[in-house]
Every structure is written in C-alpha cells, then in structure tokens.
Image 1 (tube, helix red, strand yellow):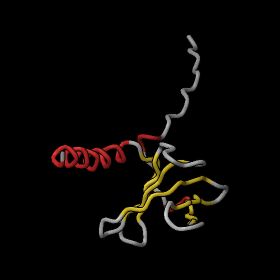
Image 2 (cartoon, one colour):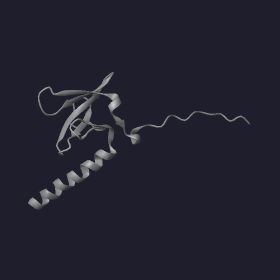
Image 3 (cartoon, helix red, strand yellow):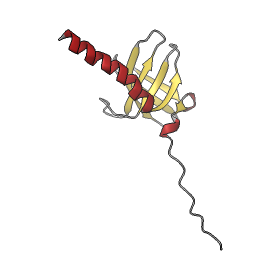
Image 4 (tube, helix red, strand yellow):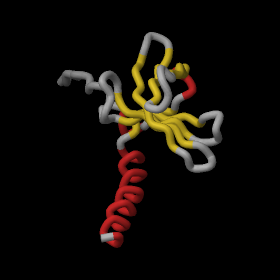
Length: 110
C-alpha cells in the first residue's frame, strides 16, 4: 500500500509542473526568489482562476486571481482575508496563450 501511495504522489509531483508549464497564462518573479504563475483553470476558486507562488526554498502557496482595471488581485488560500495586488506590467504573458490576429479579408484585383 505504501508503494502505491508513493507512486501516486510521485506521479502528481511530476505531472503538476508539466501541466503548469503548458497551461499558464502569465508569470512573474516574486520577492521570495520564486515565481508567481497565473493558471488557466478554475479549481476551487469561486471567482477567478487558480494561481500559485513559489519561493526559492521550494514552498508553494495557492490562491485565486482576478483581473481588475489596473491590477491583478490575488486572494490567497491560507490566512483570513489575505490578498495581494500586482501591476499588469510585471507579468510575462505565455506566448502559447496569445490568439493570432484575425486575417484581413483581402480582395484580389485582377
């Protein structure tokens, strides 16, 4: 039984970073020496989408993010009413998430 649990937990840790690499919307370095990563799925968020922040020591905090007029608001899972606001310009957008501009309808003049 311990072996099965170890395999499942190991698979989760291996697949979670791979999933996060392909399904992130934006990311930015944080003051803890890690990264803030905005994800594309809702998870347990009532409003917004999931987000995590890592530290240089490997700790991870989870939360939910919402876009406002001038900031990204984060409502962290731990702590009561713990929130953060980040300016948009600190984030790098995932190029794979960008949608191409619509093609121009160009007529042919013969």
